[in-house]
Image (cartoon, rainbow, N blue to C red; front, side, top):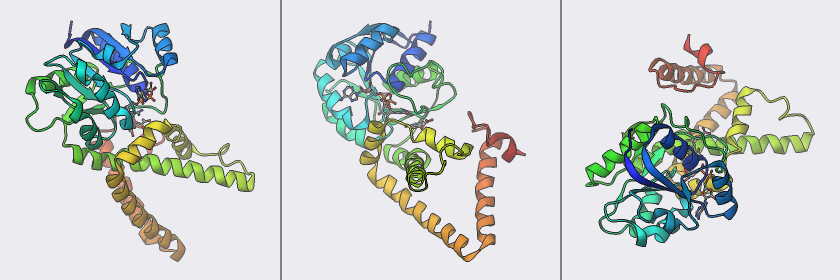
Length: 306
Ligand SMILES: NC(=O)c1ccc[n+]([C@@H]2O[C@H](COP(=O)([O-])OP(=O)(O)OC[C@H]3O[C@@H](n4cnc5c(N)ncnc54)[C@H](O)[C@@H]3O)[C@@H](O)[C@H]2O)c1
Ligand SMILES: O=C(O)C(=O)C[C@]1(C(=O)O)C=C[C@@H](O)C=C1
């Protein structure tokens, strides 16, 4: 038995929480897992599929007496949920979250954490385009990163327990500062999602204008864009609204590079295009050679690694 906590509460029962539940059960990391979702339909679904040991009808009921409460709701809802559970939190308990943005979550949740309760924010770098209580699976976190973002002076035991939980769920854990996290994720996740949303929107507009079959005959790269662009609208609206500065910074840089490539195409500067693509190909090769590509999509692996 690898039990880390007697009682864990999961608030918001979507992809991330349901995957946590199955991964916790797989490894026996908690004695009991309680759960709460805002909509009665989601709570009914959770009960039907056996998600959580006990489904509660309020966030406070689920959190009361828990040793760890994990907020698994969209980033924009974290503060409100923290306010609801604050008064019932057990002294010595830990509150964590899984939000894709960290500075905003820290600022909106911290004021509601009572004295004697630890707050250790976290972010698993794993997901799919699916959402809801039926989308989770126990393997989601296997061999993926989970970043912990503890404040300076956080209780070392609370941080160590949360680390043990994520490692028990299969993840590799590292600690990171909140602002650095938000900038890194703006590059690796947030801006790419916005670009995918835009590219799919452009293709859709074009389809309407020309009545051609842009989507039907789309190649693998574009199909990957459509997968990403199918991600949950509420989650991603909140990500962009709450990681505004870092995302705008990266989009500014992206636009400058795009204009430079656009200009190279217009002026026929093949050397500039070739040099640019050679540099980006080397980056991909470096990732593969360093063994950091844990789930490379098939279109990339063989060809660029040679
Ligand atoms: N999906 C991903 O790829 C991914 C990856 C890492 C982290 N995250 C983060 O995890 C969190 C949850 O994402 P998800 O993919 O599980 O989303 P999801 O849409 O599958 O689930 C979110 C759940 O929260 C509930 N909810 C929404 N507002 C609520 C509120 N005010 N009170 C109570 N419940 C509420 C929804 O009904 C839903 O059940 C988000 O903060 C997201 O940024 C997502
Ligand atoms: O694999 C996917 O579908 C994801 O988009 C997962 C992904 C990512 O960008 O890598 C999305 C949001 C997160 O906060 C963490 C992981």
